[in-house]
Image 1 (cartoon, rainbow, N blue to C red):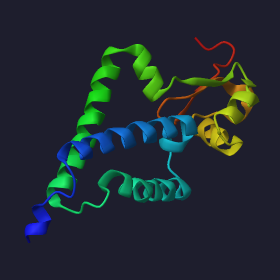
Image 2 (image 1 turned 180 degrees about the horizontal axis):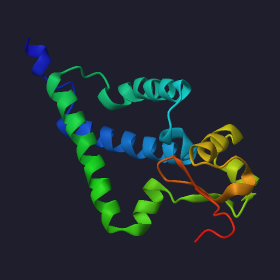
Image 3 (image 1 turned 45 degrees about the vertical axis):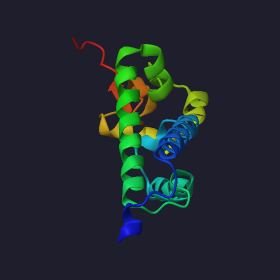
Length: 162
C-alpha cells in the first residue's frame, strides 16, 4: 500500500514530461489537419487510443504511484485551460492552436486543391452538401471547413429569392 503513494521521480519531472508531451502532441495533431480531430471515424478513434498508449511511458516513466498520476492529470488539465485562456486573448495564438476556417467552394466552384490539401474526401463534401439541401456543386454558394473539422455549406439562393 505504501508504494501506491511513493513517487518514482521528483514531482517537477512529471510536470516537465507532461508539458513536453502536451506540446509535441498538440503540434502533431495540428500538422495532421482539421479533419483528423473534427469528425471521428473508427480509424480516428483507434489512432487516438493508440496515441494515448504511445505517450504513456513518456509521461509516467517508471512511476505507477497515485500522486504521480494525479500530478500528470492536473498538469495536462492545467495546460489545456492555460492554452484556452491565452487563445481567447490572442487571435494569433488561437489561429496557431485551433487553425483557421478554409473555403472549399464558392459560387458553385469547388476548390479541389483545397479539398485535397485539407484531406476532405469528396464523399464528405457531398454529405455536407446534401445535409444543407444542395443537390449538386452548382447549388453551393459557400462551403467552409471549420476549425472544428465540420463542413458548413450555404446553398445558393435561386434567382428571384429575396
